Length: 454
Image 1 (cartoon, rainbow, N blue to C red):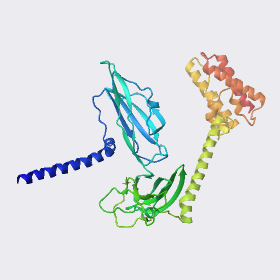
Image 2: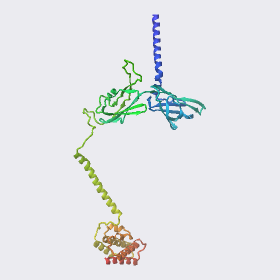
Image 3: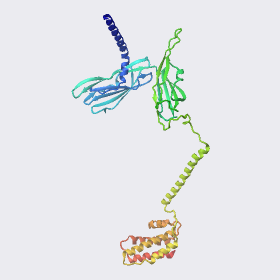
Image 4: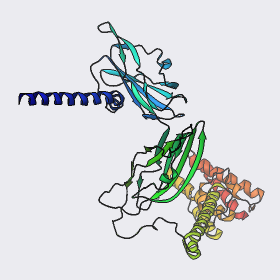
């Protein structure tokens, strides 16, 4: 029993060492990749440097964007000189964008630096590390100095990359989605087209597909444009997604294969799944909807009654309203445009004679003014009927421009002088302070002379 217990302990110790040995071999390769997946947490350090990268896989000819966020406490001075000339070997710095200093919170400021990186074309496939970024600082509060460094970022260089993009991710049942599958690979890589032709986009249906080939230096670029559509929701999943696609490829051997070696090693690269949101008010029915989004054709009769006829009526109505508006504006602008007369010259003459016969000079100033107003109104109405203008125009026209409406020269030159003199006398009596009897009588004789000439 004693020996059995010793043997059992030895087996447990040996087994534990083997597990630790395996984990120790895998940890250096995956530790950096897993660390970057963790969300950075703000600590109590004077300065912190966070790094983010847009893609952990790189292919020759592709540019990576490394975003460095530097945060420091208030009262800390960071030495940022030379950050645009830092060496990040084996990566080549294609460009640097330095951001402005901004406020992070009540205790920290920050700045963002973006590096555009690329790998030389002669680098082999494998995992490469972006080196740490070190910055010196000085704490003005306690006069201490120090250095801060970022964590290294592991990036894998691959010979093939695949990426899928859609033109829209919110659709209704029956809509069409344009899905672009972009494959980049080095020239010594062969893509298995038999696998690509059998790609499964379920629950989406492939309506059509076209292929485009490009060459970018040592990289071959293939763009596969798919037109997809969804006609029904299958199963209980209400948010469908374009599944991840697996692309198979193999590396061509530059050396001649040995006899009997007919097996090639295939590898794979996958695209990320893309969720699609269904935005529809349609009920889930068991009716096929393949034709609901197809082109709709109309008959010539329907086009005429629902298209050309309403357009024609609208154009005619627009022209009619336009001409009417223009005529109205022209009538208001032009002072010489004749307007219909509301009464005959005979009626207006009788009204003028009645006004003259009932007007006599008196000691009552208000009565004299009222008589003058009536005579002026009756005279303008009478002259307006002779000229051919409306009563409104005759009453509102000034004395100097009144006879300008006499386009057809209804009055001789001598009569026009008398009319102009009578209107001026009326203006003098209306706007004068006192009404004299001589002026009043002179005005009456002038108007009686106008009546006698006509």
